[in-house]
Image (cartoon, rainbow, N blue to C red):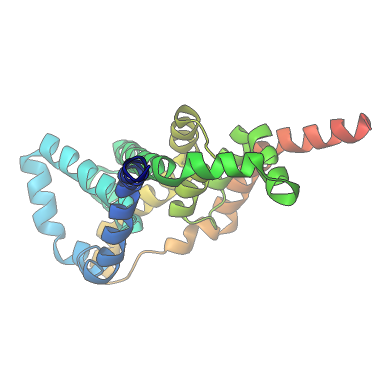
Length: 244
């Protein structure tokens, strides 16, 4: 019996090890990498980055995507700076495409780690539960696509939260990847375009306006997409009331 329990504990630890490593690296990175993944660092190294890109374009693209994946996968500070850098180095297009690919891969990595460590077990407990917890789980299950797109589109939802919540309710990997890739397109285009204009910002000695996504001409179209994501949920609720 003791050997069986030991094997069970070891198996549980192996499942949780990836997410525990991510948490540890994220905690260390939050204190040690702030100065290296910042707007000031990008401004101070812009000429070297441009020179490297011009001399080694493909390597620059692959290196940029790899660094962006690591930043997202380990929830390190600097995701917004990485997006700006994608625009600064590669223009709005194909910069935003590189940003989306990297962010999706990184998000999938942390989603998979969290799902492996806690998601399946937590989801089964929620499924077996009663009351409010069970209703929340059922509501998410019935409207997974809408909820997944909604948490990607709403600017106020932190990116790492949108990566972890689906894992904890056992969302299928395919749905997570598709909703992440397409759901982050609007915000990615906005911030990549800001990055594409950083040359002028550097010349003026200013800092980029990262709050641009909350300006009406940007926010209103995104809210319109949020409303479209909510539409299936609203229709289900209305039909449910009509059937009562």
